[in-house]
Image (tube, rainbow, N blue to C red; front, side, top):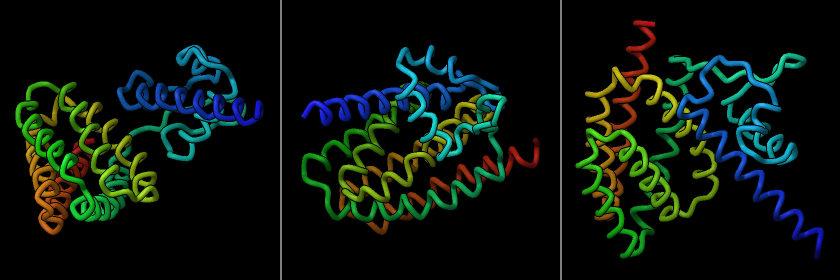
Length: 220
């Protein structure tokens, strides 16, 4: 019994460590290409070595950090070519999720999706509010879809995309407006049970980000 309780606590702390570090990586508080130590990450989280190591392993598997033997940890650089591969994969997974979400969402969930769609329409000039609403949208879509495999697979791809947004925040204002428009449309279509329309909205959303990624590759 005690072992089970201890194990649950360790998992919880590891999840906390992951959440803190993932957010710092996405928000560029840990900049791409920077070399960091395990000790620095422990200090950042305020948690112990074991949960931080578990979080590090998860982040390494998701290619947000790279383990460099005898040198420490390197924050994975943002690559336009890698982003295009991420987006290609993300498109397929998001289409699965919105299809299932449109079919399975309960009435109260459909109401919440419609509310998010309305709030997104006012978030064009507030980047932090937009990120919060985007997180709410994808979290709710995952709940509605109830496909744990698809949600777990797409989560790190969404993290890479958010990090890309932060990195190119100044040059992406027009594209962000297009992204918000597609996400608002997506939420409304899922709320209306229109899974075909929702999948087209996913395609449009990913296409906007692909154009931005391709543009940064040409100008990089």
